[in-house]
Amino acid sequence: MTRLAVGNKGVGAQGEQLVAERLIAQGWTILDRNWRCSIGEIDIIAQDPDGVVALIEVKARTGMGYGAPLESITYAKQRRLRQLAGVWLSTHSVERVRIDAVGVVLRRGYAPVVQHVRGIE
Image (cartoon, rainbow, N blue to C red):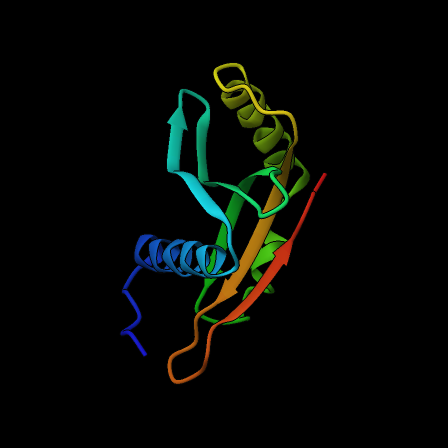
């Protein structure tokens, strides 16, 4: 098992890397990582084996002391993700797209716990 990074950015980056590796192992194609524009960032943009492009928000934590990672995706965050999707789609031509969220719990000494929710709204 790899050593846990220190600090929120390190944990976030480690969670994003874990999610990207798992998606690839499941037959997904990573199109972009940490795509940024003036209003924010999309953690991972990937195409699933069925051809759907998913704009993925990854939330990683080292424990459940502040609740499950996906609980931190508020209505305001969902609205921001939809705005980001609109900006990304304005420069990319895709037929099918959705917004996904993946929660990751990285606890030292335990296997990572990953929860992938497809099509959050």
